[in-house]
Image (cartoon, rainbow, N blue to C red; front, top):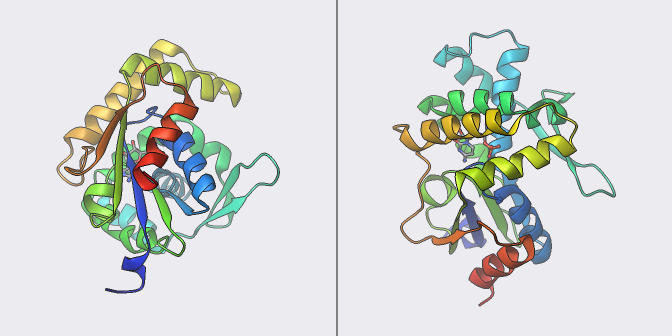
Length: 226
Ligand code: C5P
């Protein structure tokens, strides 16, 4: 077994708005493990491609962009937020928008782009452990993970959560528009040929509809520390 393979991994997959980001950050903090926000990598590639003026449907150009990308995560201080620096630019605010999510979803359907991000993701597996948040963490990137969770929630609840999050960040969105965008993105993520959004066979399914954050964190932690 390689050294990396001996490092424990907890994968947390699920659709947008299922609470993955919040839950993964809290669980990683509780365990003192590293955190991989894999969605941020796809968002960063979409952003970098846009900044470079690339045609985002040009698979070869976007793949080259993904292969050469520099993405750094920097703790933002007291509020616990993380800044994302893409090719030297602080892109944190741009990456949060639903437009960036949709662009990420479009380029994430391109197999060579996914391939270009594999090594980067595997590099996050460092002692004492890793919490990996995404769509294919338990199925493709860390299939050998000892702990796997798949979070779900009803589409209406997921849209409401994203609405609240984006409003708090001062973004101008409507609930109905957001629900449409989220459903379109999830359909694309679930129906793509490569690494579709689906639970790993050995993942624990947790429906977070109507459940508070603390209870979900407790359920997820119980997977690692029964
Ligand atoms: O999780 P987040 O909303 O930031 O992800 C943005 C998009 O990136 C998703 O809609 C999905 O298309 C893509 N993604 C992916 N595989 C991952 C993480 C995200 O395809 N592991």
